[in-house]
Length: 217
Image (cartoon, rainbow, N blue to C red):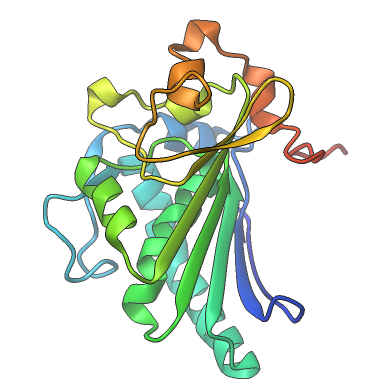
């Protein structure tokens, strides 16, 4: 799975970006489907509530890339004297990005971290969502597009919950703030896309402010 760490001199921020699900390859699809909730890796996430559990597939992928991401972010912070880190991604990349956004402040003191995810699936249980909401050094925005079904997966009946910070793009294209966790309003994903049968898979790739996710050969 591809990722990128760089520095934006205009924003004066280190940027961490993760690729979304590549449906042409088997491993990302297996990762998405590995929906068992498992405890966080204590070496990567020291000192957090033992009740926190996250998607096993997402956790495994994040764990494999975490040492390299941490080293690259530390190098960029030292080189540019940065104090802020923004983590972003789409779909699977958003899920890995959210875990990175929780992980990085545990190992790099005195930074503020912002997460901006697109088409974010649910990543962890209620304790995970509550930790994300309570983390003082972390600001979270996750953007859902129209009838995209991915943000309602995995289902809450399996124990998964979103943190706060949803912004929902409605059918006319307006961006609407959705306070709280899994806001049930019809103007937000949980209320707008009540099950996968009323969703539209093509909305997953956008557009997000005019930008479609993906690439063409």
